[in-house]
Amino acid sequence: MSTRFPLTLVLWLVIVFLIGPFLIIVAASFSAGETLAFPPQGFSLRWIFKVFTVESFRESFVTSMILAVGGTLVALVLGIPAAYAMSRYRLPFSETVRTVVSAPVIVPGIIVGLALLRYFVVPVGIPITLALFLAHTALVLPYAVRVVSASLANLRSDIEEAAVLLGSSRLGAFFRVVLPNIRGGILSAFILGFVTSFNQVPVSLFLSGPGIRTLPIDMLGYMEIVFDPSIAALSALLAFLSMGIVLMAERFLGFSRYV
Image (tube, rainbow, N blue to C red):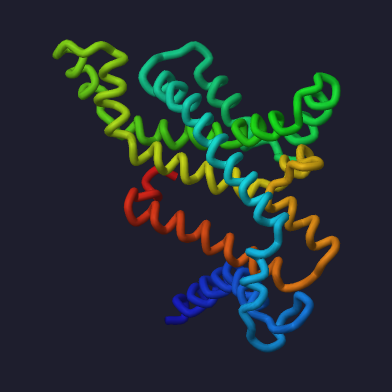
């Protein structure tokens, strides 16, 4: 009993440390006051409804959705063949390739954003919208490769070989046997990449410009001018959205098996 109590106490302290800020934001989003504060001043839903009336939030939400969905799809198109090649064949410098693919996760996002802005957007003249899309794709690519590789590791290679022996081409076996059997991993990679891209701040901060702003960057700009509870309301809605996506993925796909 004497050993169990300290461990239980530590566990609850960790839970409070992780969940506490989220609960504070949720409580502040229902405040009836005019400024963002905790504890909330009364109870009101008006800041929840105001989120949907701010035009810049709607526009930046669409931008973030396009970047997250488009960037993740492109990352999967590139990452699935790469994961397949590294899982099924003995490639030279395979460990070096894995390290390079993982570089966007290892290197801080603020460095990636600054490098793209300094060496591609400014001197080369790449449109900032294209640079932002490429940056989000590069940031999501490591997740696509890693998650799909984990799914391929659980798929027996002799199933694919059996399809080839029965007359299927190697490409046909890939589309008819491999892809259907790793669809759970692919969907998990898409969800993980989508959430990562949608919530991305450091890279988007450097590559956002006039007429192109993601939702997190728009929220930062909004707080510089207005300090009302609508930011807390929007943060709570986004948190619930992310949690809902992850919980559904765990419920129907077994998300934790791949990440």
